[in-house]
Length: 185
Image (cartoon, rainbow, N blue to C red; front, side):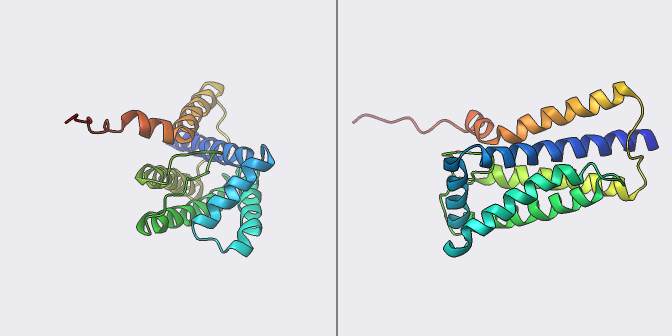
């Protein structure tokens, strides 16, 4: 069982690390992307005068998480920081939804899709993955399993997970019910 927990922990670390790498890079790919993230943060409730420091702190933490996920034992510090950030992001999204804000997420760069339930569900799923990683790390899962095939499977599973997370808006649009047919009179 120790080996399977080790691979599960590794997959959690790869998935969470990959999500936060993509998130940080998407915000830092240009001035426009970063300004859009600042604006989204303000629209979600960050005070205007603190929007830049908050945006910088978020991007710094997002860049730090993947590094902390590499630190033994089991990347526990990275998982803890990721869980805390995901919790804050989720609360901010739920608050924005309750206030009927129509801001975009800007989680993975420019997006015109307003924050919706799909973002809350996505974050809840990431919180479950993070919690699973914390549980495995605290349960004594080995830091790095030794079988290359198992490592490859864990990495591939995480990659698929990252792609699904990053494509949340596109997947939600794909599976959304069609708009009501317009009837001519």
